[in-house]
Image (tube, rainbow, N blue to C red):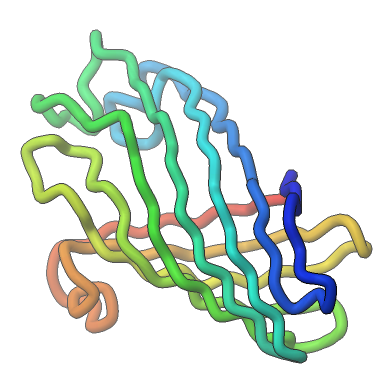
Length: 166
């Protein structure tokens, strides 16, 4: 759910807040690095600019991502950071009346406390408008120590896919 709390009179610029909540996984999923065994929650501040078939969204997001400290996260012995930040810019192109394509690029907090604080990421998204009020998004994200690794796909990186409803 996203709440637009400020919008220009011409509709070309808006500010919104989007809360998030992630259900917890099991202890075994946390041990294998697939999920965290406690729920996560967050808040995303979005500044949006609209120009016909092109939109640009600037995101600043915070997520509280606790985990069950009695178990390792992906067999990693050092503690993880639980305060996660995201900063990104996302151009969005309207491919058709009901389909938009986006490329979200930015930096995020790296959870393992023994590694560098920020990592880079690129996120490809397809957004289908089911109605005027409901969007379904499918995404694929790759993250690494820097954007060169993300783009070239050479070196250590991680990836994930998600589905979301707004």
